[in-house]
Structures are given as C-alpha cells and as structure tokens.
Image (cartoon, rainbow, N blue to C red):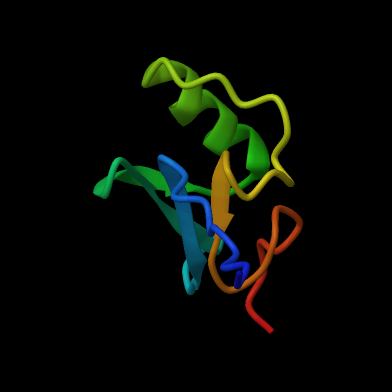
Amino acid sequence: MTYTPQFPNPRITVLPVQPGDPPFRIVEIDGEVIGTATAVTDVLIAAAAAGIPVHDLDDPAAVRWVGGGKLSWRLH
C-alpha cells in the first residue's frame, strides 16, 4: 500500500508581495480576490469578515502563503 500525502486546500490564499507604497499582498478567499493586505492583521480581518476562523496562521489547511510566509511583507 502506497501512502500519498494529502495537500490541504485552504480557503485563504495570500499571494506574493507586490511593489507599492507600502508593498502589499493580494488575498484570495475561496478562489476570489477579496482585496490586499499590508500586514498579517489584514489577512485576519479579511478572514473574520468572511466568517472563516483562523486559529493558526502556520497551518497549511488554514492559509496558503505563496512567495513567503506570514512574516514576508517586503520585496527582496
């Protein structure tokens, strides 16, 4: 029997940092762009507005971070 890892499909996706003043990240919920975030608190506010409880921002089943994790908010 072969084990195939299951990859979570979270409702929230935070895309890579985009240039701006300040730099920002696009936030998607259920595959739709709902706005931008300039800090992790903006992601939590968007989740709460959509009725999605987020207990652990590091849980890949809760949030998918693309192009850097929850601490990546600047262009490199």
